[in-house]
Length: 386
Ligand SMILES: Cc1ncc(COP(=O)(O)O)c(C=O)c1O
Image 1 (tube, protein in one colour):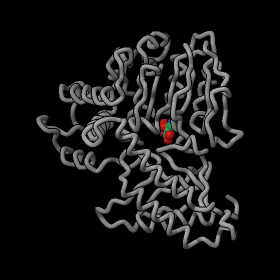
Image 2: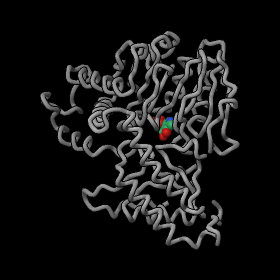
Image 3: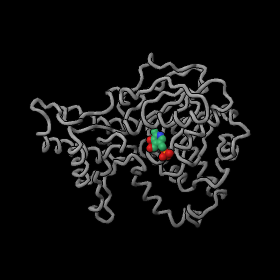
Image 4: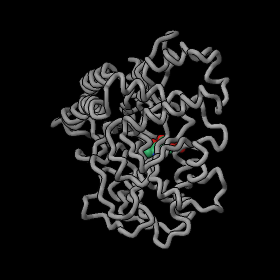
């Protein structure tokens, strides 16, 4: 699909609906630019200082304080900064938490990323899928009675927000004694989470919290004891926790950006409750556009499971979807094409997407529908191959 950014004038920032790496807060980009040559009081760039210097000690501590303060991470949990993206966690989690356990890991699969995580875990050990939404095209989440999760499971894994399909858990399911393991890659720091109920929460940073290169793992301290001594050091949570996330050179710049984003969230919204309300209001504008479109736009996710992060929908035909993406780009609204595996349209409206961008997209959707209305049937019902 066409996502032509060539028309952007020098210095002109477009409204970027990319699923990740994604839009960053302008204030954060400006701070990075301002301090790029020289961190205040340090005399060198963040790109030049040792990861064991006092200046980086402070950045690491501030990042931990930022995440810990926003999420309310209790003393029972450790915050670890890793590399390899969320994808590496698909393997590290079973290596650390499943190896040597007598019971399988349970997976609640609500989309492409959860399915990918289950596949990697099965390479390491025994996996039980307690629910898989594939037959409903990952358009909804399970009802409580539909999941056959075992309370004895080594852990229960789910994906809090499926980035590709746009379905999001509103409330975490009860998992009894089995530790809950949550891939929060695409809604991390976008809303409050009860970390005390989590065995392990992990997220890559490049959607809501910063740039690619760092993955945050928040792990219950007692689970660190499951990491076998025979694991390669770089794959062991225990080693990373003991070495204060500096078992090797960490992604210093990505951690620095994460600290700035945490500060921006605190300064702009105060806490995650306020930020979540703002995010929900942004997404609601787009869902309202779908619901009032008389069938021109068809949302993918069931209403109760709609994501506040990734709004996914189809148009009456693939031709119209291509035209939508191209005409939106002409208006400065870019990266709206759905994931290559599912097609359609996806508007990613993470923390840093300004309300003005969402309003402009909403207005564009109305105008586009009016100018292509003939594509729907006489009663307003969508025709074509949506
Ligand atoms: C929910 C979810 N999990 C995992 C990933 C993979 O992240 P990474 O590319 O950092 O490995 C993504 C990335 O899009 C995601 O959205």
